Length: 616
Image 1: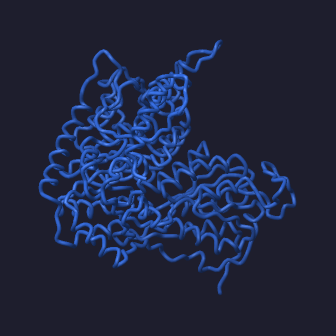
Image 2: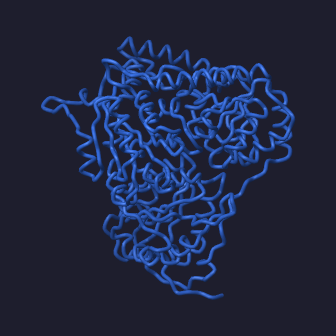
Image 3: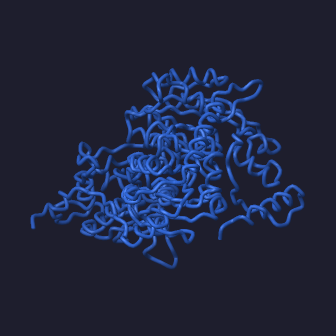
């Protein structure tokens, strides 16, 4: 066996740089799009040297915040529909533990990212090394053990030759359609720099060819029988439709069988927004069209969705119907005692479409009518001009969308938390698969700008529009500077409602008084009521920024931003007191059984009413 003398990290980096993935068209492209790195004493000498040697084949990008660069890496994978990934490296200590939130977010969303934090010395010779966590009861514990519950695969490389086993296992997890998720390989500082005889075959890996699991014959036969018996079916499209590349198969099946489609947050953009059977968003943030048909459906065909509580209305929306779940992950396919069809989403839809069957014609016609009416209502909501009041999210979304003359098929909207996910889920019109990029599995405040940067790196031809509130902006904004530094232009639209407006509405709806959410409610005696100039702050980070006075100015600023080459930040004052009331359904938020406030007692009675309709 021919070998080359390399350090462990040199072998790791060269393997990553050489990996190719086969796309659906048969072409081979680099699987790893690069490595995000913030260097410290725990990774600069070992892994840093290896990355420098391979910088032409595997580019390294420097960010300003460890959590943010991991968000960017995860967003890159999501925008590539899990076909490509990025790696992330930090030093030991706070740099490593700053990655934990992003790891949990990737785990929840079933998205791949390769985390490469430095670790303490395997030899233990200099213990305790700078930033080392010492467990009084366990000598083999380091801070990196916090990654175990938030990754799909964890390993600590204690000898250099272990990378020959650990890295292929990590790649297998990240490319597995069912078990896809984040991976952590903790890299002790001394082992990073130790050399071994690396087999040259390890440096020339075979291309990655992603699997499309076929369904079990008996499960498929049962699923077809269930489908034949349905008269009022509804498809709930989840993120698995996008990751499988099943958008065309979904459109073909829906059109042929006359089955309406509703989309979860993860699945939105699976079907063209103007498809006559697209009912729009479903669930807590769903459209009236989708939710009304969900309540009357006799079969829910859940495709590639993990049936999160926002999709199911905390299991109150369609608990009466037969549930047939097409999912590559058995854990998801068997949820809520549903009937399962474990397979790739595209394959599953194609197999189900093979039979001669259609939904009841009256059901299909009702769906077409409801979809058309909702699309007309979306136009009304997003094009009205507010008078004598601050605008709310719908009017901002409309101005963003209407700021381009032709159909905005290049636009990708990025968001994660607050009020905007509800409004965008209902009102954003995605022009292509992936045109709606929402992190709503973990709803990570601060994901938005960093995530937008990852999306731009995955889709450089797209106009990436990050929409976020002032709260999320304050949580994490440093990658505005990174986007400018890297020449990856973003358009960032900041809706300033002066605090956590979304949670204040929930607080009031729960019967509690306004408390600790809006900035004005948080000023103690001797404190100062803040007025934050977000545009000035963004300019200080290198962006071009403006604070617009109203929706008309926003539309004009958006047109200028589209023509610009540098990252743009547009700030507009909005109100949190208005939202789109159309649609929606119950969501379980526990209300105290005992309170001194009658408003809480009333909210608890409403809570019990909702619980009474919950499927168990």
